[in-house]
Length: 374
Image (cartoon, rainbow, N blue to C red):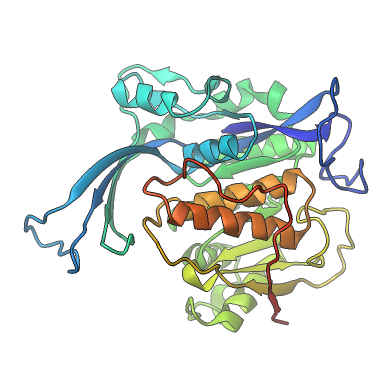
């Protein structure tokens, strides 16, 4: 779980739309108390096997020449690092093993960010092996994430005092159903908006198997994850066959789910993303005080051009981080999406999942185009 100092005075709530016309303040005020963003996420070590030949990776037992690089990874840790580099002070709530890999992960984020990451004795820090081809595409992923099961409801409840002051909860799909249920219950209890990053197809439906799933306000799935969510919500019948390059069909699926969840941000790899929500593109991305009787509408944002692609492994996490920064600042939908897309481009050009620096100053407004679909 991840916490971040947001530029919102303590008395305001994103969910009730109070404060600056339902938005967050855009700058801090000296001496004023601010709330923190809580993000429920997980950690991992990435062992990258980078293939640099003009042949496809053959998974048939043969030895293939490659270059290896060890880096800190995991959806939650990546988001934590990205948010730090985007100018926030996050606090990460997760768990690592009492081993060298755990020490390495903890050292990859700031001291204030790791206050709620215990080192568990006799446990292995989560580790993944990612095989990339010469185009930077992931060809194989092997993972040991058993420690995720030890991120328990008690850990969440122990942090209730700080969670309840949060303007936004963001969690990923690696948490157990019981832990997710506890987290969403706290969101309901304290009236806190929630963003869910599904992480993987098998875990995408976990929150929707809890009695508190209606407290989720924003989801950021890829197409396969959204299909699983739609199926879990009983909506898959008419949309199961849509493909990633069929923008209108994907938009129809996102719109169907947006009748159940306030905002759907469907990521489509190099086809960009589709956002489905009731509000206009000029309204704050997290604007929950709007007219609930409106029908959702869909907009397609094309991907930005990247000529020197190096690695795709962190693009989704940087996209999410850029969007989260925009949400905290009270930005409109179009500005939040621009933040995310520009952050993703920087990741695609980096050998590591999270670039050392983000080339765009995300407090600026960046021109970006979209197409209304419905």
